[in-house]
Image (cartoon, rainbow, N blue to C red; front, side):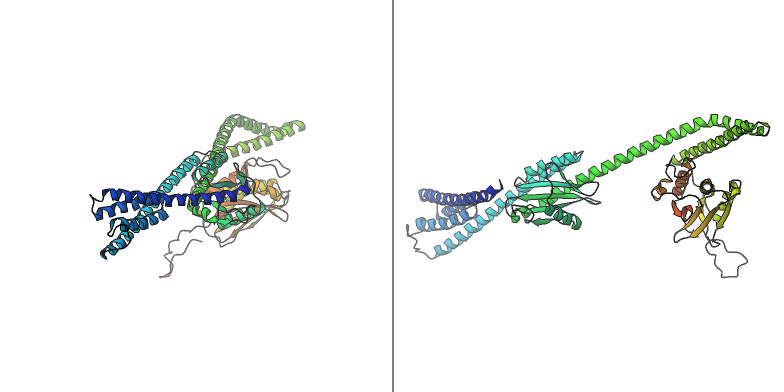
Length: 522
């Protein structure tokens, strides 16, 4: 099929020459018919009226037969008027020199009218082409607007083929791995085409070349750039020369923009649907979590009270029974803490809490957290490093105390008895970082980011629910802060960061000397 394309172009050129010859022939016949009509009416019409008939002939020829036929008609009409209607008749001789001016004006007016008529015709044809292209673009936009999948977008290529029947278009879209994939009937890219497409996407500029196809046909590669990133490329080729392809550049660029917008719309629709599903799943999980936690609270209260009552008589119980009482008490306490964490997490995730943020020193909340865990810290030594120049920070003291208690309790749970629990704070560029570290086992690097997810997989020998660190993450997010875990030489360190902000200015002390200004609270 490709071998026939040159012969098809030759036939097109032959048809063009044949059409031009027919136009010249019809112009000659039209001039002859006008002359015959003028000869029949010359007894009733004056010379100027005969001239008008010849000018009308030129206009009609220019309107329907084109530039060459109009030029020939103008020359023939002037010659026929001279030969048949200017004395001496049947001769090109001119008895009166004023007719020379008449011939010149007539020829000039004929050529001018023919040129203007052809210009109007071309403008009308161009307007028709633009209207047809606009209609096709509207049809393409409507088709792409209804597309729900990439397959629907690829099928819209058929609309492009109707608008540009001489051009073959192929669509290639980027997948999730940033690789170009053919859409619809488009074939796989050759190595050269893939390389050229990569350049087009990187530079965001179209490329026109004939070196990428086996039959050296001109190929235009257009980038499909959306509002946020590249979506793929559109390839267009045709059998004729690159000049013909460039003539359709504006139309192809408009088509490429429509395909890019459609692919981007599908991407954002998929993202929105995914977010909606995740939000619905999160709401369902939180609802179930809150309901289950409240339902467990009632029997748990009875169980916890019974375990406390048994502990009062545990000293007089036999050894085997005493161990069972201790186990029941320990597990009921653990279950009580777990349910409390569930309720707290459900409350935090539903957003039914308000931060009571105040500017206050960090040392106070660290001290209160250590006091709450005094009994648990009895078997460990505390290494506390808080710089004296820490500024005031804006936070909810109750919630931040909960964060520090969870971090310290987590460090104690996974540290051997007698080891150190290190609590440090450091002033960074735009935040204060508070870290709690222990001397326990390290955590695989791949699991460090999973520690703060609800019910995260167990990374230590001792069981844990993963709720405490998830609560910490939620609280720190509400404070516009962050939380992270990192391994150290002999254990794990978990750090939270609080933004510095702008502390309020302290009022000037009345005992300060005059002229002294109040500074920021530190």
